[in-house]
Image 1 (cartoon, rainbow, N blue to C red):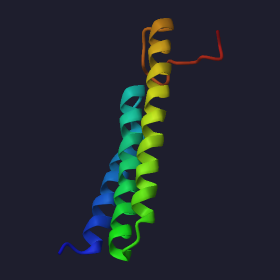
Image 2 (tube, one colour; image 1 turned 45 degrees about the vertical axis):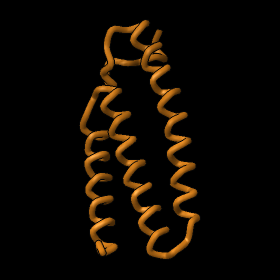
Image 3 (cartoon, one colour; image 1 turned 135 degrees about the vertical axis):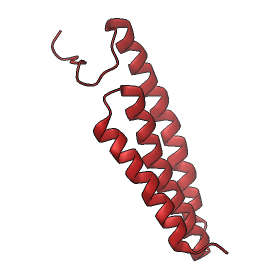
Image 4 (tube, rainbow, N blue to C red; image 1 turned 120 degrees about the horizontal axis):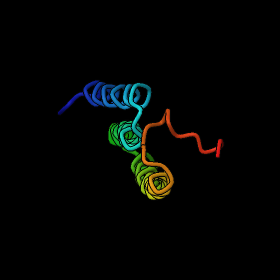
Length: 100
């Protein structure tokens, strides 16, 4: 049986990779993928604690997080497509929608 600390370490590593991607990258699509990594690390924590505590609430909450994440990705990709039609760049620094 895999100890709880390994799952928590995996989740922490994935969250740190996602956080570094959000803070260091400038492409909108990469930032969205890094946000997905961060949410998936939270899901790993929820499912891990749900399994170790023998309670289904963590798994149910993880399913809700996955559902909300899918809706968030659909809206974010629609916004990215709209930005690409108006501007030719996906860099976060170059996008200033309030100016024009």
